[in-house]
Amino acid sequence: MSGKSYKIAVLPGDGTGPEVVVEGLKVLKASANKFNFTMDFTEYDWGGDRYLATGEVLPEDASETLKQYDSVYLGAIGHPDVKPGILEKGILLKLRFDLDQYINLRPVKLYPGVDTPLKDKGPEDIDYVVVRENTGGLYTGIGGFTMKGTADEVAVQSMVYNRAQVERCIRYAFEYTRKRGKKNTLALSGKTNVLTYVYDLWERVFNEVGEADYPDITREYYHVDATCMWMVKNPEWFDVIVTGNMFGDIITDLGAITQGGMGIAAGGNINPNGVSMFEPIGGSAPKYTGKNVINPLAAIASGQMMLDHLGETEAAAAIEKAIIHVTGQKMKSMGAGKMGYSTTEVGDLVAEHV
Image (cartoon, rainbow, N blue to C red; front, side, top):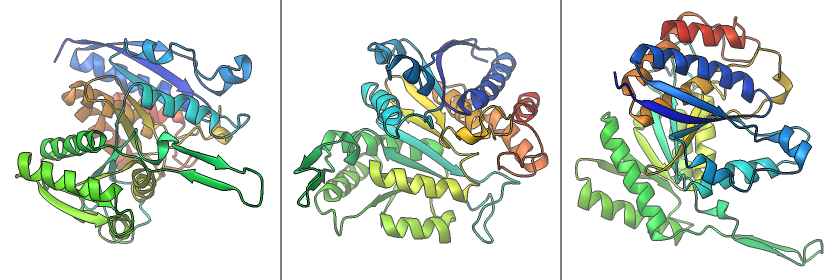
């Protein structure tokens, strides 16, 4: 019962984003009422429609504007009439970089009643977290073309990391593992046998920091290809995984499908000392726009992550319990149009249970 007040910027975005955000806000408001804190929501129309109307991806002062808030709640970015990359780079990547959201936090958790494609695995087996470095590596766009469009064209894109970037991500992962308090095991996922410079740096920092400051946390190392195999074969082995930007992008989507698909997977772009942004990771799903059939649980779960990050742990736990009740007792499937309920009804069920 904190009695606190939070200012939240809301970016409903494109496609089904606005529909799932409405349900997420419904649940956030219900939890705020129950646990005695207030949330003040301000909406911004940044996304595909605005870009098509004005030619502007983001206002000049967008990042400065968002720094005035306690957190950012995002629906989805991606519009069928806008060339891929324009909105994703111009909004998502820009905000991540400008707000220095250097951690991408992705819980991989199978809820009761949700189907997984992994044979003989249940909720007790799939419950781990991936900490992905979110502002460095291949995504910084260092590189370019020479002789573009000719038979001799060369394209270069470099994976660049400095020690400070690596260390702050690794420290966050150790702290998170300790706070999580499950198996107290942190695994580094890399490729030291081929990427002998970048992942040599990661591995050295991982061991130095772990030895000096986190002797209570068990350290493990897996090549990224082995990580993928074990995520499918023995997901119960994992507690927390830390990795670079590119590998993190790939393995978190693999994790998402093992937890029941994009309709249930939520993520956070986190700056531990600044403004963080929480979102469902399934994208804008434009073919379902306006039909009231999309699964809002990923958006609701990202709202739950936001509350947990803000320190409203009781309210976050209540939302998670409500999601587990709804997946375990109510919904037929996670797929759009197959849930047995409309988007709005799923939001109502979770809010009522909170």
